[in-house]
Amino acid sequence: MRAILLSPGPVSISEGVRRAVTRTDLCHRETEFFDLQDQVIKALLDIYQCKHMEWAAVLIGGSGTSAVEAMMASLLPEDARLLVLENGVYGERLSKLAGIHAICYQVLKAPWGAEIDLHAVAELLASGEISHVAAVHHETTTGRLNPAAEIAALCAEYNVQLLLDAVSSFAAESIPFGSSSLQAIAATSNKCLHGIPGLAMVLCRRDALAQNIEPRSLSLHLPLWAEHQARRSTPFTPAVNAMLGLAQALRELHKQGGWQARRTRYRKLAADVAASLHTLGVKQWLPADESSCVLRSYHLPDGLAYAELHDGLKQHGFIIYAGQGDLAGQMFRISTMGEISDYDMAHLEQAFQSVIVE
Image (tube, rainbow, N blue to C red):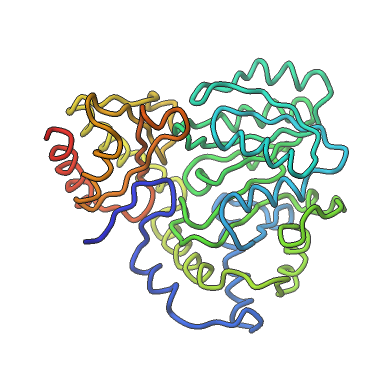
Protein backbone atom coordinates (compact mmCIF):
# COMPACT_ATOMS: atom_id res chain seq x y z
CA MET A 1 0.00 0.00 0.00
CA ARG A 2 1.28 3.46 -0.93
CA ALA A 3 1.73 5.65 2.12
CA ILE A 4 0.33 9.18 1.85
CA LEU A 5 2.36 11.48 4.06
CA LEU A 6 0.19 14.10 5.74
CA SER A 7 3.12 15.32 7.82
CA PRO A 8 4.88 18.68 7.38
CA GLY A 9 7.77 17.10 5.50
CA PRO A 10 9.00 14.91 4.08
CA VAL A 11 6.18 14.77 1.57
CA SER A 12 4.79 12.20 -0.84
CA ILE A 13 6.61 12.75 -4.11
CA SER A 14 5.57 12.35 -7.74
CA GLU A 15 6.68 9.44 -9.87
CA GLY A 16 8.65 11.92 -11.97
CA VAL A 17 10.67 13.06 -8.94
CA ARG A 18 11.14 9.48 -7.79
CA ARG A 19 12.54 8.47 -11.17
CA ALA A 20 14.77 11.55 -11.35
CA VAL A 21 16.37 10.79 -7.98
CA THR A 22 17.62 7.40 -9.22
CA ARG A 23 18.02 8.23 -12.91
CA THR A 24 21.80 8.28 -12.96
CA ASP A 25 24.98 8.20 -10.90
CA LEU A 26 26.45 11.69 -11.12
CA CYS A 27 29.87 12.84 -9.93
CA HIS A 28 29.77 16.23 -8.24
CA ARG A 29 33.00 17.34 -9.97
CA GLU A 30 31.73 16.89 -13.50
CA THR A 31 30.31 19.46 -15.92
CA GLU A 32 26.95 17.71 -15.89
CA PHE A 33 26.56 18.31 -12.16
CA PHE A 34 27.44 21.99 -12.41
CA ASP A 35 24.92 22.40 -15.22
CA LEU A 36 22.34 20.85 -12.89
CA GLN A 37 23.39 23.10 -9.99
CA ASP A 38 23.11 26.24 -12.16
CA GLN A 39 19.68 25.13 -13.37
CA VAL A 40 18.37 24.59 -9.82
CA ILE A 41 19.76 27.91 -8.55
CA LYS A 42 18.11 29.82 -11.39
CA ALA A 43 14.78 28.02 -10.93
CA LEU A 44 14.74 28.74 -7.18
CA LEU A 45 15.27 32.46 -7.73
CA ASP A 46 12.63 32.53 -10.44
CA ILE A 47 9.88 31.14 -8.18
CA TYR A 48 9.35 34.61 -6.69
CA GLN A 49 10.96 36.55 -9.56
CA CYS A 50 13.96 37.50 -7.44
CA LYS A 51 16.41 39.67 -9.39
CA HIS A 52 19.53 37.60 -9.98
CA MET A 53 21.83 40.61 -9.58
CA GLU A 54 20.42 41.31 -6.11
CA TRP A 55 19.69 37.81 -4.78
CA ALA A 56 21.62 34.53 -4.55
CA ALA A 57 20.27 31.05 -3.93
CA VAL A 58 22.84 29.09 -1.95
CA LEU A 59 22.45 25.31 -1.86
CA ILE A 60 23.74 23.23 1.05
CA GLY A 61 23.34 19.65 2.17
CA GLY A 62 21.12 19.03 5.17
CA SER A 63 17.67 19.59 6.63
CA GLY A 64 15.66 22.77 6.83
CA THR A 65 17.23 23.42 10.21
CA SER A 66 20.64 23.31 8.50
CA ALA A 67 19.49 26.14 6.24
CA VAL A 68 18.21 28.14 9.21
CA GLU A 69 21.47 27.62 11.12
CA ALA A 70 23.55 28.54 8.08
CA MET A 71 21.50 31.72 7.66
CA MET A 72 21.87 32.72 11.31
CA ALA A 73 25.55 31.83 11.61
CA SER A 74 26.59 33.38 8.29
CA LEU A 75 24.61 36.61 8.05
CA LEU A 76 24.59 38.05 11.58
CA PRO A 77 27.75 40.11 12.31
CA GLU A 78 29.50 39.99 15.66
CA ASP A 79 27.91 43.26 16.77
CA ALA A 80 24.36 42.20 15.77
CA ARG A 81 21.60 42.89 18.27
CA LEU A 82 18.98 40.31 17.40
CA LEU A 83 15.29 40.18 18.29
CA VAL A 84 13.79 36.70 18.01
CA LEU A 85 10.02 36.37 17.64
CA GLU A 86 8.75 33.18 19.29
CA ASN A 87 5.30 31.59 19.21
CA GLY A 88 6.19 27.93 18.74
CA VAL A 89 8.93 25.32 18.63
CA TYR A 90 10.66 26.76 15.60
CA GLY A 91 10.81 30.29 16.95
CA GLU A 92 12.39 28.83 20.07
CA ARG A 93 14.87 27.02 17.83
CA LEU A 94 15.98 30.38 16.42
CA SER A 95 16.84 31.46 19.96
CA LYS A 96 18.77 28.23 20.57
CA LEU A 97 20.80 28.81 17.43
CA ALA A 98 21.55 32.39 18.43
CA GLY A 99 22.79 31.15 21.81
CA ILE A 100 24.93 28.38 20.30
CA HIS A 101 26.66 30.85 17.98
CA ALA A 102 27.14 33.48 20.70
CA ILE A 103 24.88 36.04 19.01
CA CYS A 104 23.53 38.77 21.28
CA TYR A 105 19.76 38.36 21.27
CA GLN A 106 16.53 39.02 23.11
CA VAL A 107 13.15 37.34 22.76
CA LEU A 108 9.61 38.55 22.23
CA LYS A 109 7.68 35.50 23.31
CA ALA A 110 4.05 34.54 22.78
CA PRO A 111 2.32 31.29 23.80
CA TRP A 112 2.42 28.50 21.23
CA GLY A 113 -0.20 29.24 18.61
CA ALA A 114 -0.80 32.84 19.71
CA GLU A 115 -0.40 35.82 17.43
CA ILE A 116 2.83 37.81 17.43
CA ASP A 117 2.19 41.20 19.04
CA LEU A 118 3.13 43.60 16.25
CA HIS A 119 2.65 46.61 18.53
CA ALA A 120 5.24 45.16 20.90
CA VAL A 121 7.55 44.48 17.95
CA ALA A 122 7.25 48.11 16.87
CA GLU A 123 8.03 49.37 20.38
CA LEU A 124 11.17 47.26 20.58
CA LEU A 125 12.36 48.32 17.13
CA ALA A 126 11.67 51.99 17.92
CA SER A 127 14.14 51.78 20.81
CA GLY A 128 16.99 51.72 18.30
CA GLU A 129 18.64 48.83 20.13
CA ILE A 130 17.77 46.14 17.55
CA SER A 131 19.73 45.59 14.33
CA HIS A 132 18.13 42.32 13.15
CA VAL A 133 14.92 40.35 13.60
CA ALA A 134 14.62 36.59 13.17
CA ALA A 135 11.14 35.13 12.72
CA VAL A 136 9.35 32.00 11.54
CA HIS A 137 6.91 32.48 8.69
CA HIS A 138 4.85 29.30 9.03
CA GLU A 139 5.07 28.05 12.62
CA THR A 140 4.26 24.38 12.07
CA THR A 141 3.91 23.75 15.81
CA THR A 142 0.29 24.81 15.38
CA GLY A 143 -0.01 25.75 11.72
CA ARG A 144 -0.11 29.48 12.40
CA LEU A 145 0.99 31.70 9.51
CA ASN A 146 2.87 34.61 11.02
CA PRO A 147 2.51 37.99 9.25
CA ALA A 148 5.80 38.12 7.36
CA ALA A 149 4.82 41.16 5.27
CA GLU A 150 3.83 43.21 8.31
CA ILE A 151 6.98 42.21 10.19
CA ALA A 152 9.11 43.12 7.16
CA ALA A 153 7.34 46.50 6.89
CA LEU A 154 8.09 47.29 10.54
CA CYS A 155 11.72 46.29 10.06
CA ALA A 156 11.97 48.54 7.00
CA GLU A 157 10.43 51.44 8.92
CA TYR A 158 13.08 51.20 11.63
CA ASN A 159 15.99 50.25 9.33
CA VAL A 160 16.27 46.75 10.81
CA GLN A 161 17.19 43.63 8.82
CA LEU A 162 14.96 40.55 8.75
CA LEU A 163 15.98 36.89 8.58
CA LEU A 164 13.02 34.62 7.87
CA ASP A 165 12.61 30.91 8.48
CA ALA A 166 10.49 30.02 5.45
CA VAL A 167 11.22 26.31 5.62
CA SER A 168 7.53 25.38 5.62
CA SER A 169 6.21 28.23 3.48
CA PHE A 170 8.63 28.71 0.58
CA ALA A 171 6.91 27.94 -2.75
CA ALA A 172 3.39 28.03 -1.27
CA GLU A 173 2.90 31.31 0.63
CA SER A 174 3.53 34.95 -0.23
CA ILE A 175 7.01 36.06 0.91
CA PRO A 176 7.95 39.78 1.02
CA PHE A 177 11.01 39.65 -1.24
CA GLY A 178 10.24 43.20 -2.32
CA SER A 179 10.82 44.58 1.17
CA SER A 180 14.17 46.29 1.68
CA SER A 181 14.38 44.77 5.16
CA LEU A 182 14.28 41.11 4.07
CA GLN A 183 17.85 39.89 3.91
CA ALA A 184 17.43 36.12 3.65
CA ILE A 185 15.03 33.21 3.86
CA ALA A 186 15.79 29.59 4.72
CA ALA A 187 14.06 26.76 2.87
CA THR A 188 14.33 23.06 2.08
CA SER A 189 13.65 20.71 -0.81
CA ASN A 190 11.32 18.27 0.94
CA LYS A 191 8.38 20.47 1.83
CA CYS A 192 6.43 22.77 -0.51
CA LEU A 193 8.94 22.18 -3.32
CA HIS A 194 8.01 18.45 -3.34
CA GLY A 195 11.57 17.15 -3.46
CA ILE A 196 13.28 14.62 -1.21
CA PRO A 197 15.13 15.28 2.07
CA GLY A 198 18.81 16.13 2.11
CA LEU A 199 19.02 19.44 0.27
CA ALA A 200 18.46 22.85 1.81
CA MET A 201 18.85 26.39 0.56
CA VAL A 202 19.13 29.99 1.67
CA LEU A 203 17.98 32.77 -0.63
CA CYS A 204 19.80 35.91 0.46
CA ARG A 205 20.71 39.33 -0.76
CA ARG A 206 24.16 39.46 -2.31
CA ASP A 207 24.97 42.45 -0.07
CA ALA A 208 24.31 40.29 2.98
CA LEU A 209 26.70 37.62 1.68
CA ALA A 210 29.42 40.24 1.18
CA GLN A 211 29.59 41.37 4.83
CA ASN A 212 32.92 39.60 5.47
CA ILE A 213 31.64 37.98 8.68
CA GLU A 214 34.09 35.71 10.48
CA PRO A 215 32.97 32.09 9.89
CA ARG A 216 31.14 30.48 12.80
CA SER A 217 31.02 27.14 10.98
CA LEU A 218 33.02 25.37 8.31
CA SER A 219 30.36 23.40 6.45
CA LEU A 220 27.50 25.88 7.01
CA HIS A 221 29.28 29.09 6.02
CA LEU A 222 27.12 30.49 3.22
CA PRO A 223 29.73 32.77 1.59
CA LEU A 224 31.96 29.74 1.06
CA TRP A 225 29.18 27.79 -0.65
CA ALA A 226 28.09 30.82 -2.68
CA GLU A 227 31.60 31.61 -3.88
CA HIS A 228 32.15 28.05 -5.07
CA GLN A 229 28.74 27.75 -6.71
CA ALA A 230 29.21 31.06 -8.55
CA ARG A 231 32.28 29.61 -10.27
CA ARG A 232 30.63 26.24 -10.94
CA SER A 233 32.23 24.37 -8.09
CA THR A 234 31.29 23.04 -4.66
CA PRO A 235 33.31 23.14 -1.41
CA PHE A 236 32.07 19.78 -0.14
CA THR A 237 30.15 16.79 -1.47
CA PRO A 238 26.59 17.98 -2.07
CA ALA A 239 23.31 16.04 -1.99
CA VAL A 240 23.56 15.04 -5.65
CA ASN A 241 20.51 12.79 -5.88
CA ALA A 242 18.37 15.21 -3.93
CA MET A 243 19.37 17.87 -6.44
CA LEU A 244 18.37 15.61 -9.33
CA GLY A 245 14.99 15.20 -7.68
CA LEU A 246 14.63 18.91 -6.96
CA ALA A 247 15.34 19.85 -10.58
CA GLN A 248 12.41 17.68 -11.63
CA ALA A 249 10.22 19.00 -8.79
CA LEU A 250 10.94 22.58 -9.89
CA ARG A 251 9.93 21.75 -13.45
CA GLU A 252 6.68 20.30 -12.13
CA LEU A 253 6.06 23.37 -9.94
CA HIS A 254 6.47 25.66 -12.95
CA LYS A 255 4.23 23.48 -15.13
CA GLN A 256 1.52 23.47 -12.44
CA GLY A 257 1.40 27.27 -12.28
CA GLY A 258 4.01 28.24 -9.70
CA TRP A 259 3.65 29.02 -6.02
CA GLN A 260 0.29 30.74 -6.37
CA ALA A 261 -1.29 27.66 -7.95
CA ARG A 262 0.31 25.48 -5.32
CA ARG A 263 -1.16 27.66 -2.57
CA THR A 264 -4.59 27.39 -4.18
CA ARG A 265 -4.32 23.61 -4.34
CA TYR A 266 -3.14 23.33 -0.73
CA ARG A 267 -5.99 25.54 0.46
CA LYS A 268 -8.55 23.38 -1.32
CA LEU A 269 -7.14 20.18 0.15
CA ALA A 270 -6.94 21.72 3.64
CA ALA A 271 -10.55 22.87 3.38
CA ASP A 272 -11.62 19.39 2.28
CA VAL A 273 -9.90 17.84 5.31
CA ALA A 274 -11.45 20.40 7.65
CA ALA A 275 -14.92 19.78 6.21
CA SER A 276 -14.59 16.01 6.57
CA LEU A 277 -13.45 16.30 10.17
CA HIS A 278 -16.12 18.91 10.99
CA THR A 279 -18.86 16.45 10.04
CA LEU A 280 -17.34 14.08 12.62
CA GLY A 281 -17.28 16.73 15.36
CA VAL A 282 -13.53 17.38 15.18
CA LYS A 283 -12.68 21.05 15.68
CA GLN A 284 -9.80 23.05 14.26
CA TRP A 285 -7.19 24.30 16.72
CA LEU A 286 -6.81 27.65 14.92
CA PRO A 287 -9.23 29.44 12.60
CA ALA A 288 -8.58 28.75 8.94
CA ASP A 289 -7.77 32.41 8.21
CA GLU A 290 -4.96 32.31 10.80
CA SER A 291 -3.49 29.06 9.51
CA SER A 292 -1.11 28.48 6.65
CA CYS A 293 -2.26 26.78 3.48
CA VAL A 294 0.27 24.04 4.25
CA LEU A 295 -0.91 22.62 7.58
CA ARG A 296 -3.80 22.81 10.00
CA SER A 297 -4.05 21.51 13.55
CA TYR A 298 -7.07 19.86 15.15
CA HIS A 299 -8.31 18.96 18.59
CA LEU A 300 -8.16 15.25 19.28
CA PRO A 301 -11.63 13.68 19.21
CA ASP A 302 -13.13 13.01 22.63
CA GLY A 303 -12.17 9.58 23.91
CA LEU A 304 -9.62 8.93 21.15
CA ALA A 305 -5.92 9.03 21.98
CA TYR A 306 -3.48 10.21 19.34
CA ALA A 307 -1.85 6.78 19.08
CA GLU A 308 -5.21 5.20 18.25
CA LEU A 309 -5.98 7.84 15.64
CA HIS A 310 -2.51 7.62 14.11
CA ASP A 311 -2.40 3.84 13.99
CA GLY A 312 -5.93 3.57 12.65
CA LEU A 313 -5.25 5.99 9.80
CA LYS A 314 -1.91 4.32 9.10
CA GLN A 315 -3.74 1.06 8.44
CA HIS A 316 -5.58 2.93 5.69
CA GLY A 317 -2.29 4.28 4.26
CA PHE A 318 -2.21 7.79 5.78
CA ILE A 319 0.50 9.19 8.08
CA ILE A 320 -0.58 12.11 10.26
CA TYR A 321 1.48 14.15 12.73
CA ALA A 322 1.30 14.53 16.49
CA GLY A 323 1.24 17.72 18.50
CA GLN A 324 4.51 18.80 20.09
CA GLY A 325 5.47 19.31 23.72
CA ASP A 326 2.55 20.00 26.03
CA LEU A 327 0.17 19.90 23.03
CA ALA A 328 0.91 16.26 22.28
CA GLY A 329 -2.09 15.03 24.23
CA GLN A 330 -4.45 17.67 22.87
CA MET A 331 -4.01 17.98 19.12
CA PHE A 332 -2.97 16.39 15.89
CA ARG A 333 -1.77 18.00 12.66
CA ILE A 334 -2.49 17.35 9.01
CA SER A 335 -0.45 18.82 6.18
CA THR A 336 -1.67 18.78 2.60
CA MET A 337 1.72 19.26 0.93
CA GLY A 338 3.06 16.84 -1.59
CA GLU A 339 1.68 14.64 -4.32
CA ILE A 340 -1.88 14.12 -3.05
CA SER A 341 -4.66 13.38 -5.54
CA ASP A 342 -8.42 13.87 -5.33
CA TYR A 343 -8.69 10.08 -5.16
CA ASP A 344 -6.41 10.11 -2.11
CA MET A 345 -8.64 12.72 -0.49
CA ALA A 346 -11.76 10.62 -1.04
CA HIS A 347 -9.99 7.66 0.53
CA LEU A 348 -8.91 9.84 3.46
CA GLU A 349 -12.50 10.88 4.12
CA GLN A 350 -13.49 7.20 4.28
CA ALA A 351 -10.57 6.52 6.62
CA PHE A 352 -11.71 9.31 8.98
CA GLN A 353 -15.19 7.82 9.04
CA SER A 354 -13.85 4.38 9.81
CA VAL A 355 -11.35 5.32 12.51
CA ILE A 356 -13.17 8.15 14.31
CA VAL A 357 -16.71 6.81 14.18
CA GLU A 358 -15.67 3.32 15.21
